[in-house]
Length: 128
Picture 1: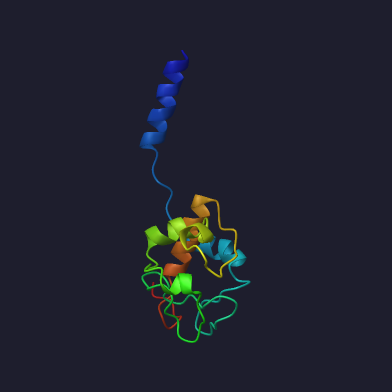
Picture 2: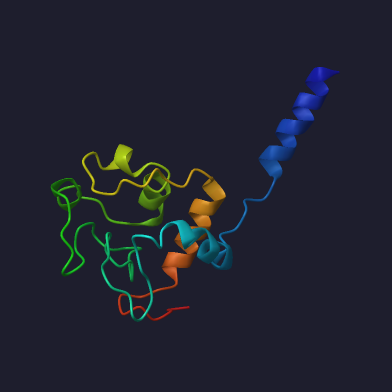
């Protein structure tokens, strides 16, 4: 009987649709990022760099921001896959980063934050 239930459970998981990214939920989840980062038309560098156009941008390239050597030489490009691994544990992905944030542990919140970030072009205007 247990194996039947286990099989049904696994089948349900395998056929369940993936949860979509939600930019509105991402804006709410981004509140933990706002202490150090700004985004939008009037965004400025704070403790961390402004994040306009971050998705697709090479790490360490925001003008006027002083990056750690670790970030400058990471060779990363902030695509969705990289952000999905970085946001839960920044220090694990870029050892020596100045970013002391402990990370966003909820995978759905990470996806939602990325969806929120993707809305902003390099000039801070929404692209969608």
